[in-house]
Structures are given as structure tokens and as C-alpha cells.
Image 1: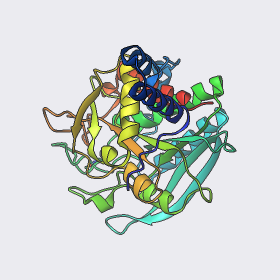
Image 2 (image 1 turned 180 degrees about the vertical axis):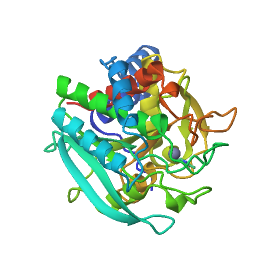
Image 3 (image 1 turned 135 degrees about the vertical axis):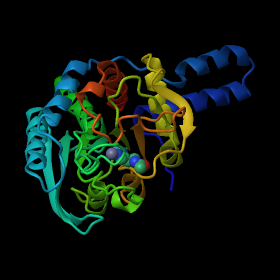
Length: 333
Ligand code: AHN
Ligand code: ZN
């Protein structure tokens, strides 16, 4: 079910616009009033401070642990690193640990990492990304059964969100922010089914870390670090949360990032962590995910051994980081 309602300041701005439209409809001087309507419809986003250098380092630090595949020591070590970083930025951290059954019946020891800024506020935004990496390179021609480093697929979303956490700590906006790093998104075999994906987010949506937890809306970052990455309007996001998607794309345009945030709608995501968040947790959520409508693929390095630090581009990190952080700051009272 799609929730169309927008929250906080955006909702108020729209009410003002509607009120003025009523004035236009009833009044005489429509042309003059119409001009006013346009100028109050939405506030232009301010460019926030966001360091792509810092986001890049957060990605490299993860990749330096090696592939982050559940049931490996590298996965445990990288998970502990992410917890330490969120705590360093004064986020209250809950480590949601459990076991889930994978496609091949393996019991996976997984950990969703949940960081909360101003947990006492009801006015909240949820940001999320998966932190595990794929156990195979099924799209590669070589070493298909070896795990990938996942600099972009896994590392990039987390890196951008850690930098957002650091900036939130600096700015101390009056809005609640939850950052969740979901586990076991990508623990899937070759040609896996959609049910095999997103085990961590599905577990969280069925076992919320706090009774009655909710947020105004959610934003998933998946594969947001590659050079010239294009983010199209992903079909499921449009289905569940089109108003929020438009809102975020407008903010990206305000900040000059239309080259990355493309207005085409594409149906290219089988499943991703925003699906359980929308369907089970009922929080309207969008997925910012790379897709190339020309090649009809996520990216050439997707699920290959080329998904390493060489594909990470700071200009893309800057565009995504500024856009998502500006969206968060606009929710502050
Ligand atoms: C598919 O829809 C096949 N993949 C999107 C989910 C994903 C995998 N994101 C990263 N890896
Ligand atoms: Zn993947």
C-alpha cells in the first residue's frame, strides 16, 4: 500500500501552496497571486557540508577487511568496525544479531547494525544500506565462486551513510536520524531467486529493534559510488513512495546533480532492502540504485571482481551524500 503523505516542513509548505491556490481560484488578480504560489511551493535545498574524501575512506576501510561474507572472520571484524564508527559519531547503537537460513540451508550468523541520533524524537528519517558482500562473482568470467570485495556493492552506501553520521554529529539538527546497515542482502547463489535476497532487512522488518518503531520515510543507498553512476526512478520506489522520490530528485536538481539523478522510471530491481521496509515495516521508502538504461544493467563491474576501489568516484559520492544529507536537514524543525 502506498502512503502518499509527506511530513514535516514539506507538508506545511504544500498546505500553504494549496491555501494560496484557493485564493487564486476565488480572487480577481490571479496572475499576480499565481506568481506567489510558485515561489512558496517548495524551498530550494541548501548545499550541506559533506566530505567525499571522508566517505571514500570509510569505503576503503571496509574493503581493507576483505570480502564481508557472513560466517567469516572478516565479516565479524568489519561489522565491529561499523559499530565503533557509529558510536564515535554519538549514535546510539543496537546490534541486532540472529541466525537466518540461506538459500543453500546454511545457518548464517548475521548482524543488523542500527544507529540512532536523537532516539527520543518522533520526527525521524531512516537511512539504510547493506553492509555484507556477495559470496560469489557470478557475473565474472573468472573465479566465479570466489567472493567479491564489494567496494560499490556494499561498501559505497555504508561509506556515504557514515559520512552523513559524522556530519549530523557536527550539525546537530533537530530531527531524529536512524542509520541501519543491513546484513545478508547479497548472500545468494548463481541465478538466485528474489526470496534469497535481503535476509537481514526482512528479519529487521519482522523484529523491529524498538516496539512501534517508525519513521517519516526511508532512503536506501545501493551501489552509489561508481563513476558517472545514473540513478533512475526505480519502479518499486515509485510504487510505494513516489512523492518522496520526487522530493529527493528535486533536491538533487537544486544542488546541480541532475547528471546522476535521472527522471526516467525504470523497472530493473527484482528485490532490494526497501521492499521489506515498505511491505512489512510499512515505512514508505525509496532505493537510490545505479542503473544504465542503455546497457540495461546495474554497472559493468556488478557482481564481478572488478567491484573494487578502482570503480569508486568521489564526485558521485559527493552528489549522493549532499542530496541525502540535504533531504535529512529539510526535515529538521
Ligand atoms: C537484483 O534485483 C537482482 N538485485 C538488486 C539487489 C542487489 C544485489 N543490490 C545489490 N546486489
Ligand atoms: Zn549485489
